[in-house]
Length: 159
Image (cartoon, rainbow, N blue to C red; front, side, top):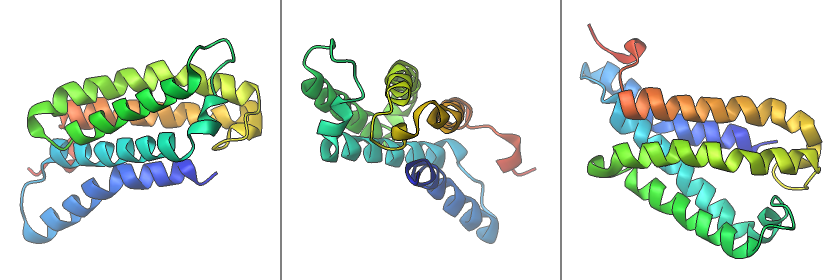
């Protein structure tokens, strides 16, 4: 189950590199900017998954959902737009709010997939997968809210 590790690395890498750089150069760290970049990279990764694994992702939706493949492509496009917007300071706030909504709205598909042992991205582990995916969703939502919207985690601030 490599995907959650990749997501966490993509999410945290820009902020980590910026943190190290600012410590070395004794500069102030713009947490909101680099946390947003990490979230943007993660959303672009999500988009790529929707394109590359589109057919498998249709299985994550119940059969009664109409236009499943089209829905996968549309949600992938939404993730791409959110990902790009997270790099543009003017749109970061709205993109972050949309990201949080996406995490909440898409989570039932993860529950359905895990309960039905869908063979994609760890869902084949069944309900055990939710032990990892549930907390990961909370981390992503927390990252978006506390770092991308608020941008004021005290651990990163210089006195």
